[in-house]
Image 1 (cartoon, rainbow, N blue to C red):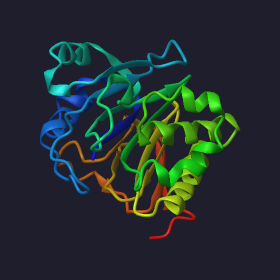
Image 2: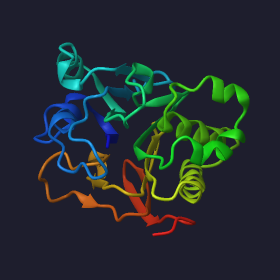
Image 3: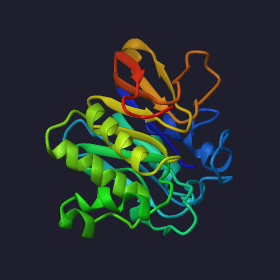
Length: 252
């Protein structure tokens, strides 16, 4: 299973999410606390994307190698500050390619997306859902993976004008019906809000008022301010507010 996080708030160094915390994303890449569903480490690539405050389109940095092998990243993360970040480390499902383009975040314009989990019965279980997408979207998938298809399904709904939480919830409900037993933990930000689902794996958040909000698969440290999100939930967050509600249309 992968690990991902998103942050919104006052600009902070990327290192404050990746390297500085006792259980930051870098440590989660080689010493995750919860690998339910398979895998032992998250060594099949990583990505981090951040908004600069000057441009609406975020900067994205992805690699196909383990995060801990990137010698340039610690200095880059220490020198780069942002008030809106999405980052992920990947544990590839057996049989899926390990390439840079298969690593989250997936992106279009200001939209950033990540998936922690797997689609059961891939790919046959979701060919019907895939067939409803424009052919161009299918032939231009970032990679032939379940996560890339989930992004295409979410993106189609966003393009049609759905709100992020509605788009994520609709995709989770549709895929859960087509592929029971899937783990569909989705994470999205547009630099202004965060939307996330729990469906088969853990998620926590830490909201500190004016200090911003962090949402992560695993808490980054032992601060008691971290709040677990129940399974089969939808989280919506801004820098100053967090709401959690039950996922609609998804059997528990």
